[in-house]
Amino acid sequence: MKFKNITPWNIEAVKSVFSSLSSRNYRIYFAGQGISLIGTWMQNIAMSWLIYRLTGSVFLLGLIGFTSQIPTFVLSPFTGVLTDRYNRHRIMVLAQVFFMLQAFTMAMLVLYNLIVVWHIIVLSLFFGIISAFDAPARQSLVIDLIDDPRNLGNAIALNSALFNGARLIGPAIAGVTISAVGEGICFLLNAISFVAVIVALLLLKIPLKPVMNKVNRFREEFTEGIRYTFRSVPIRTLIILLAVLSLVGFPFIVLLPAYAKEILKGSSDTLGFLMSALGAGALTGALIMAARKSVLGLGRVIAINTGLLGLAVVLASLSTRMYFSLTVFYFGGLSMILSLAAINTMLQTIADEDKRGRVMSFYAMALMGTTPIGNLLAGTIASGIGIPYTLLTGGIITMLAGIWFQVNRKSLRSYIHPIYRSKGILPSLPGELT
Image (cartoon, rainbow, N blue to C red; front, side, top):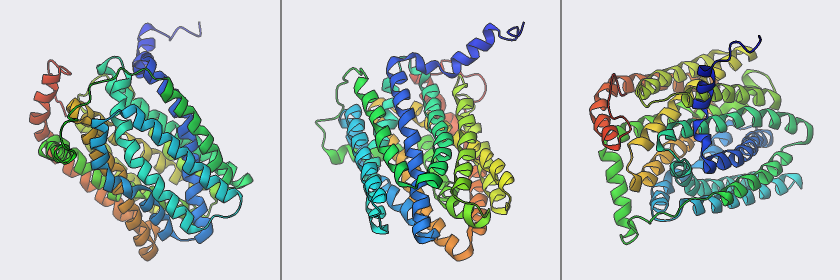
């Protein structure tokens, strides 16, 4: 009797959420990446707490965020060309090996009490350089891992669910680990976790594709990628919105160590809980996106959730209570990932196959490359006017960005409609597309 509510419809709904896991390659990649991402989030928390413990400076929190991601802003347009010219799979494997070496070096320096600020800056810069190669390869590899292209949106959403599930678990483990044995063990566990994703990548069986445009000069392909990305109205609009979000909407994350200690009067445990609340909301949003069966309505998702993200940051700026902040960051994570996953899905479905690496390099540039500028700006402003006013300003601008996208949303339909029709993604278009 207790199973009477389980119907075929329920089972089909669950299957639809995880439909892309029916592909062998994606299933293996998903498992390996899941283990590695928990370690990565442990390192992220350990890094920010280490910096704040050593210096007590919100400016340096912003500076480390800047150095770890600015190489993506500078190098991504060039590494995107390499992603389209060469084997994306091999690029990813090499990137994971170098990530592992970076984490292991950090672990040894911290465990042997040799770490100083300049070490962290240099290793963060090295991390950023690796990320500039990894990000466009990883983003554009996803479609090669699924057997049915119609599952692309689901795979992207499950990637987000995986990333944010790790964001939920990793910071909580890191907070307890830092309190018990210090930051060094977090870096060491992250280094070990890369073994899982490297093994998973080596187990993938991806048919070799003919390399596009290899006879062309690098400069010509680079220029072609810029023209293609910024002459496309929908791609250009999405990239600009993402850049604004990364500049003013997302940098609140880099201030969380100071927010936990100064505003909420907490410790590393408090930081772990805040990050876990953010991750729980983001995981919820990713599962909502994974359950979607169509690209219909993604524009509306972006507009609404950009505005809600801004509102969440505004409310966080007004909070001094732990439980209210946890609630606000939950909804902040939810709206953030709904916006990001929708933007990612739209870009990957719009882009031509032979230019996808270059388009996703601009996605990485806008997401990971603009964020360091925002981090540095947030750290500088917070050291001058305080954390609450910095968050308030970023939240208001984010809300205005959501209104701007909503105003432009309906005009995008005339551009996206023929692209989806030509690709057979939507043979007929009842209702709204964006």
